[in-house]
Length: 122
Image (cartoon, rainbow, N blue to C red; front, top):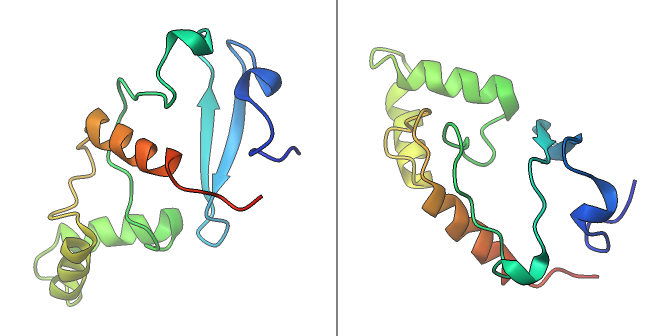
């Protein structure tokens, strides 16, 4: 295990390799990241850009994989007793309708840029 703030990706992974990334240990989101291409850092912007992807990200604090699945089930059923409450929560979060198949690379890149400008404690 290495401190992600002190290691570059090219120091820990090569093209074709994969690694697991855990996000939000409370909800236990697990991602498999595969390195498809490495380019010279001088040839790209200081923050990477997302060019493609699949599916929308789940809202924060929705309860992990199982909570997200339950949320989608409730939102798909207007007669569910929790539908109105969960729809209001999802809309307040910014996911008007939470289209799980929607993906916008520009939104992803904007989020990545906002993280790039955030100061993390050492």
